Amino acid sequence: MGFFRFFKTNKEDQSAKVAKDRLQVLIAHERTGRDGPDYLPMLKQDILDVIKKYVSVGDDALSVQLETQDDCDVLELNITLPEDNNTSTVTPTAEAKRRAMERRQAAAKVT
Amino acid sequence: MTKTIVVTSGKGGVGKTTTSASIATGLAKRGFKTVVIDFDVGLRNLDLIMGCERRVVYDLVNLVNQEATLHQTLIKDKRIENLYILPASQTRDKDALTIEGIARVMHKLKKSEFDYIICDSPAGIEKGAKMALYFADEAIVTTNPEVSSVRDSDRILGILQSESKRSKMNEEPVKEHLLITRYNPSRVKDGQMLSVDDIVDLLAIPLLGIIPESPSVLDCSNAGKPVILDDDSEAGQAYSDAIDRLLGESKPHRFMEAPKKGFLSRLFG
Ligand SMILES: Nc1ncnc2c1ncn2[C@@H]1O[C@H](COP(=O)(O)OP(=O)(O)OP(=O)(O)O)[C@@H](O)[C@H]1O
Ligand SMILES: [Mg+2]
Image 1: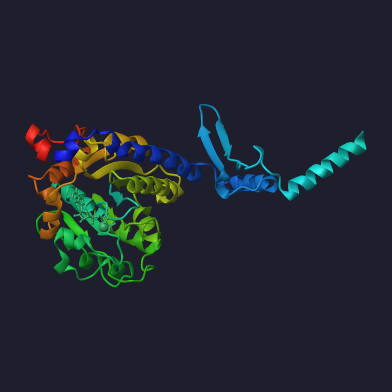
Image 2 (image 1 turned 180 degrees about the vertical axis):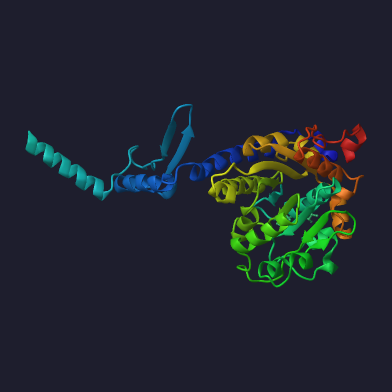
């Protein structure tokens, strides 16, 4: 323990706590990649591709968690959307704008 | 019935070879006919730890390629009856081993009525590590109280559950054991090192034992003697306890607490 550490508060030494918290998150994340059904990685990629059609996000924007409960499996999706500097909403991609335009035109025709 | 046990970890340098040597020696000491196989192709080291490096003539690759017989390849331990070592090859050819080749060796060992086959896995999660765990009935996942080791252990558990022969054949899953090595209770007490509870909590597999960080491990490897033969050392005693648990006995875990220090040694220690 040594002369100086004897007098130091123990607080700043508690790096093990940080290690455990980090590992808990990481291991849970890495387990979903392998414990889930075979199609999970592909499903994740497809969902990510759909999101990217509308918003520009990185590959880490989507986390997929499969939880087994008593009588069913729950698929939990977490999508982190980028913050925009000017507004709190995200900027639609060109593709999203084009689709919205089409939708509005179609709606206009019906009425 | 022969039981095949892999000693594995993902991460390198955590104590797999030290553990393989002591577990094999411990089982043989209890009267079980045991062979310990070094799967670390290219980096043979188990022979040194077992103290039989000068008696290596043929190796696992020779045996797989049928260039030598089982009898010619196995090295009989000089101290312990019933204990045999199967050394790794020094070849740099990473493809020297195949599942079919290993299957033939395993079959021969079973026919020779071995009770235990202990497989010392190389580090990593590549072909060599997968080959070492493929035939396992049980796995000793060797883990240090340290973030990267715990993470890699979890990954190797994933591989055991999906790429072992038992998982591929839809048989009963490989029985998993957690062995925490190089444990330093006083650093755990100070909150600097993951505790046994933390690691068991994270990996969620049954605890086979806790091997404390101990200078006798180095002394024994210098001498070419498995540390389990050093009855005076804490590490040796901890490995003995682990053997008892492996054989189904329930024993309280030792070496989890830091030795109590007096005021002066706490001040200057
Ligand atoms: N309980 C212990 N106390 C002190 N030192 C230890 C302990 N266990 C292992 N060591 C030391 O750690 C080092 C690595 O051990 P070992 O060779 O058994 O690891 P390994 O997992 O087989 O490594 P590799 O992945 O390279 O095959 C060695 O120097 C060994 O002496
Ligand atoms: Mg080794």
